[in-house]
Image 1: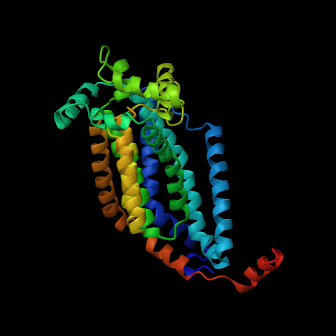
Image 2: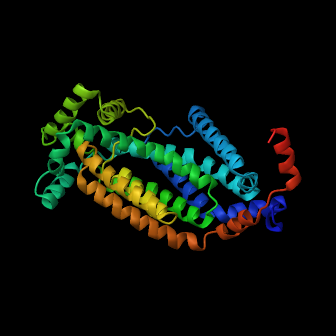
Length: 362
């Protein structure tokens, strides 16, 4: 059952737009301005490549189908609430926003080294020395002496990408619309401000590429040699495989998903912190687990040579700033409360559910 506020098509469109207008304006503005900037500098912007959209929507549709089936198996009433029109339209709209936003972000990130060059690595290296007394990775020499510990950090670091898709699925379908609105707004701010603007202001390649970005800089070669040594004995680390491939894409100036080079700030750490900030609103246990995960991502970013320690510190602070800014921006941005009330007040139609159960032999 859908309430009167969304019973007519015009009312439904108005309700969905009001809930998402801040998200729509942020994403659309970013895509248009980012695309203009890329074209201005003659950079690739594969916004119209069908394969990217098809692959994403195949994954999204599969996961959505599995989630809806799980809702029905738990309770037919949960399925009915899951497919109430404002919630369904919001899920589809959010999925439609993701691909062009990410294509634009990745294209901008992959342009940094070619347009502004990696001129901040030496500065970030010196900041790290001033803060830690030596290179931050040297504080983790006991970890590097244990290959299994490094392999676990490597796997946890890769798990971050799974977390991105898991967050999207939660954001598409969660019943907690007010929290959802703040979380999605914070995520968009993360891609726009730290991920694009700060990255362009402090362009850096990171420790694993320091020797290539700054000829003659060999400070991180012992770390890279240790990682390669672990890889030769235990199998190649994901980090070293990806670092080589990403540098190869950069040298060939070839666009590829998640192939941008930009160390400051660490979005891996920033988004892991954002996971923690969101999760603690839902569950104390989830908050503790994701808080621990954020700490391990910070350690992994240093041990695996992806980031200077200061990149992670900046990412964590910027995540908190975006989370607080999203709270202010989202308060009067739409009708999340109205949609949440519609979902909560939706009840199953007994006749329909009975027919489904009968057809399924339940």
